[in-house]
Length: 266
Image (cartoon, rainbow, N blue to C red):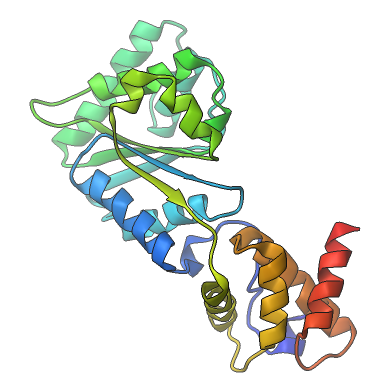
């Protein structure tokens, strides 16, 4: 509703991860490159951690855009708090397989067959496990490790990417066999003040902005509240644009930011 007022073509600060507007901060770019390395070199498992809203899911969506669709299939499990057999069924369904059986042996055989078929067609299968920190069942985590037993003569038939909040580090540390399989670990840190500014400008330009909308003081107030967490930045900035419209403001200043923060907290 505020697009015309600010001269925008689309909403710049959505709270749903969007790989099309990926901001390549130094740490997000490094995370992306590390994941690409694990996938392209068939290294088995990568783990990406970070606080809520730091951009883990956005990185994986940008990753999907960077992968050659003729060579890679990237699938995501978003709700992995499952029993081992149910997890296998969920993976089978993602790969287009038949999960209509309660025998884990049969399900695993089907899964291995699908992975082998992909490999024969020159397609590498990549499975991202989002919110992996919610997996409380050690048997489920161990089941993920066992997927790496699906191998050709010299390569894994599947690459796993574990995404989660910091508790994932503790969960993995208590499961040594899986921990030793992880070839790349990376923790996404919040943006610093300069990259917070760059992030806001990047999103506004993507949305069609042709002028500055947030003052320097506004960005500083935003950074002090959001702490460099992209999701928090998006939420505050979106509310700022709404409040700015209602006040017919020509620019978002620090007072609007403070009011937006208060409004979000009410």
